[in-house]
Length: 235
Image (cartoon, rainbow, N blue to C red; front, side, top):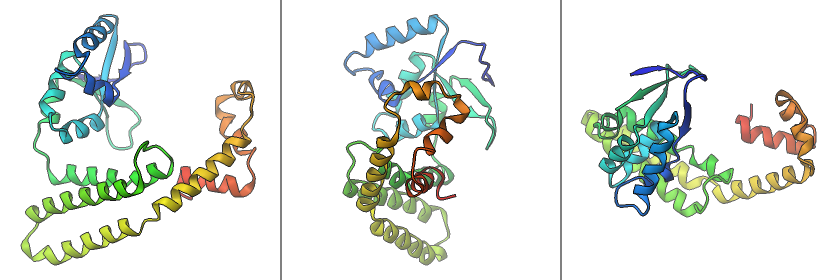
């Protein structure tokens, strides 16, 4: 069953991956948590998950347990209708199909590209508890895994190009000034936070479509430019 999201229909609750992990059988409190969520489901709450959950469940050591947990609360998969389409579709009963499916090279390529966004997330302070060394190791492992898949997919004559490409990416990862970028971002955010109004009621009174302009107006030109680089890729 699929269909576009209708705001007039039951409430949707997006499952955090940590919550989904706690729903697996054998986890402390999983039975109580399932019972609570199922009661919410009776009260017109729909629990949804995305391909991010699918990726993380596939990468776990217990993908079957995630399938069982999603099925236990009748969770729905939420996906865009098409690329660059702001509308989304919901589908039920697909956890096993998605999580236990054989992974093709295109899926692995997408996952690897997502992993390469982690340096930006690191700089923004979104990867709590992750240091630069462990992030580099994680990125290196992801590239190694992807390239092993490529070696099985492409003709042997392309091995030289593959080796050169892998070496270039690993070299770029090694040269990333992660510590420097993170430090600069923290300084910029500290300056940014210091200039925000102490009275948050000021922001509450501003129309939503004017909040960004209001906040940027409190920054000096260098800080404003730095913030725009972080949020718009320098555009």
